[in-house]
Length: 565
Image 1 (cartoon, rainbow, N blue to C red):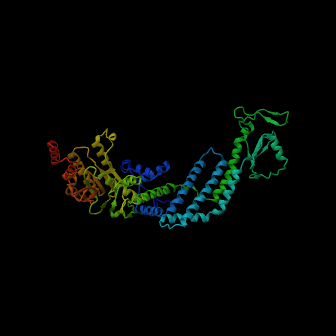
Image 2: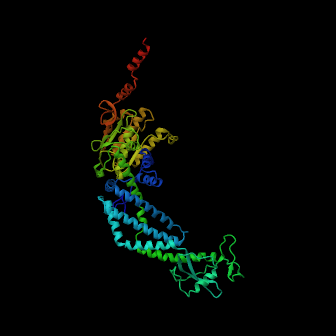
Image 3: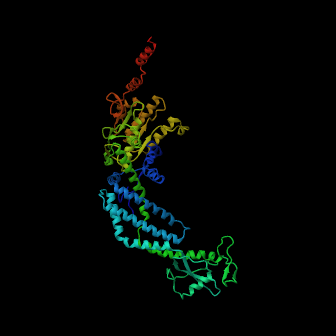
């Protein structure tokens, strides 16, 4: 079953991997930890979330599937149980690959696999039949499972599986028929029966004599499964039967037990050929089962990470909405439109912390990337929300392109082909090149990969050198972004960079540069962003007034201390 809840039928399953820097700067691990505390699930989710697709048709397909999961709690509940059974299928697959495993055990696992597969198909079919599914993905899954169920005779198959498993559970012993040559050497053998009672500790010869007394008829508790004899040329090949003697008390033929294992030499000698016979018999049954069910249950296991992804994300989105924060389905625009619009966007990490119980007043903002401007030089005071906002834009784009609801009250996006980040480098990574050299190298690497459909997020880049040197490089970086035509947010303290709009926009390109300011709104400090010129000295004045470090305030305090009263 070649089906995916991530990719529509016929779509090539390709994606672009986020860089390690982007994964770190956008806190992918923090988000994965918030989604689940199960290690296996976290690893699967992290793998999915470090990949990005820029195909608008694929993204719209995912958005619709996610919408079904979010609208229909019963869908999540039933598919959560399905995941448990899919894990069973994965365990069975590992058993099937065990070359050293018993063939009878392999047969039982095949039966269990088919039984689990039938239950999984029926679970999906019965769940989807009763729900108001709207997405193309869920409708296709219903069509596939309905077709499989109707064409595979599941009702009869399930009865047979249950009956066979019940018999297997009762299996206590195997009767082997061995033909001897003129010298009483084992010549060939066959499995005569599978028995639901164990053999007693009577001697080997007595067992054989008791069997022959029945004149070839089987006991009532024995079911004949094969009368095909297999050659036993390997029975005595290197196996020592040991000394044989007559027990004077019972007149039975005895064999010395192996002094190391406690097993009798004859049993050890026929162990391999008996296993060979069991293998051939079981393979015959397994071949029949494969013809009966010609669709592998393991193809279903590929859906497990996708189902887990949708369930865990809908759970988190529900919790965020319960805090009063908006989460909305993104409208996916053709990438040729080259526009991104977020209304009331906010940082997902803040919402996760709020879900965890932190008292947070989350400020939302609007941002638009289109023909008017696609590159923003973001300035503002320290702790004014520049980094939080820069990261918020990247996370909103990621969620939209994963198909998840976006932390905003409205969203329209032309997909990006990749998201590149340039946040302050770790001190440990700058030993060889120095801080400025390392930052410059990373910027160069980004421009080697970025396209006009990429989103670049720069956070305090080039701030570790002098203002003059940093500004010189920063201007060339912004000019390069304009020439490339990408989307970008450049968060910086270099106000002169934001004052150089005419120079920056003088370069050929169709991504216009604009000044964006955070930290001041209507003359007051806030975390709101606005398209206005950089504030420059007003920030320092605002901070000085707030903390009382202007000359007038300090002078007044000194005078008060010096006054006689």
